[in-house]
Image 1 (cartoon, rainbow, N blue to C red):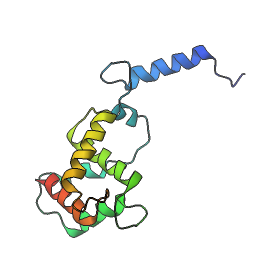
Image 2 (image 1 turned 30 degrees about the horizontal axis):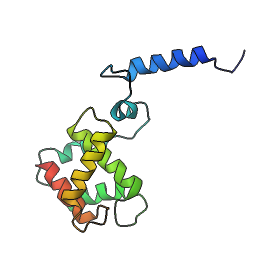
Image 3 (image 1 turned 120 degrees about the horizontal axis):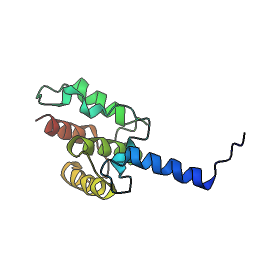
Image 4 (image 1 turned 180 degrees about the vertical axis):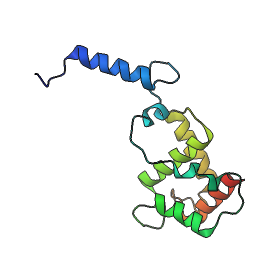
Length: 134
């Protein structure tokens, strides 16, 4: 039995994956559709603690901060920031593409990056989560 995949089989597999994951049937995979292909951890921000409550504790905020600040640098930056913004966007928009994500990131950073360092500090994260909980 040959382990090599023929060009025709590859096209067949690609078409099958596209049919399964192309939710809006535009013949392309949007970022949100592609995300469904990956074994991703639960979006922490969708948990009930962040919905309709004004009782966020320092522990809740600290937990979110620790989740995204993976290198313990004291700020959410680079890939950490990209992951956080993607998770945040998924809360407000089901179907999005890279342009939507870039626009959303600019808007969030403009409104919440108080010191304009391009990162999210714990204080800045607190503002975002408090706005989210309202």
